[in-house]
Amino acid sequence: MIEILRPGLLDLVMDLGRRGFRAQGVPDGGAADAPALMLANRLVGNADGTAGLELLLHGPLLRFPLGGRVALAGADMQARVNGVTAPRGRALEVPPGGELDLRQASGGLRAYLAVAGGIAVPPVLGSRSTFLPGGFGGWQGRALQANDVLPLGPAPQSRRATLAPDARSGTLRILPGPQLAGFSDTALKALAGGEFTVSADANRLGLRLAGAALAYAGGELASQAVLPGAIQVPPDGQPIILGWDGPVTGGYPVVAGIIAVDMPGVAQLKPGDKLRFRFVTPEQARAAWAAHRRFMEQAIGWDA
Image (tube, rainbow, N blue to C red):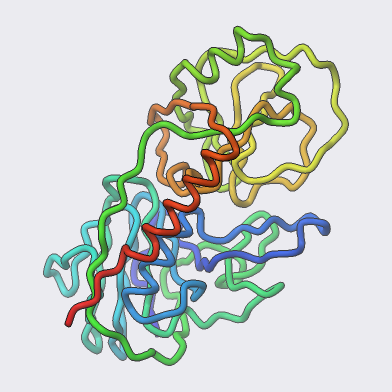
């Protein structure tokens, strides 16, 4: 079990999400930086989709009454076990009664904590992920609070391993969206050549950007299906990147969509961060996915 002594800014139970319910208005959700959760799980011997904790910007103080094996990936939260700085990229042993202290994130916005055996909350619609807009999943459908106690599953066997660093670019690769033709050449040049800033209005629903206004001349739209990574443009022209808990339909024009392998990088963007977009072809997107698959296969180095 895990006792929450001090909650972080936003601590959520997350796995890889719930598939197949978008027709009922429920997005996939799940870990915003899915590869980080998967790699943390591998370090402690869990299956990739085992539920862990998604931690935002400032982490919690946790007690492990029975001890446990943990690993962190994503942003660096300066982990300390019983006051001693813990190395990154390796599984950590927390002794019975030990405390894991996680502080301010650096090198990103979200960290992922995996615990051997996983967070054993009841699944809802096939997933243990927290869906805050609906108030279900995870731990009582909400962020963790002081004095919460999380159950753990049986810990698997594990070998010692080391995590390779993942280099991510500040440029997000995009494919044309369904309303691309309704935007002028000037707007498209601003999208693909300009710099945008993540505003303070950024969360799991979406990230509102500030930059050159993208004018749309295509007229009104009926509501259409949208996915995480879709770049919607409201009437003010400031684009919005739809997030992991965002709507499944929307009425704003979608100028482009971020390719799947770059969405984990979006998860690590903080308010004030700068970003750029670059159009790619479907063939380049598929090649990027293949390269990502190779990285995931090679990211864990097993010790002898």
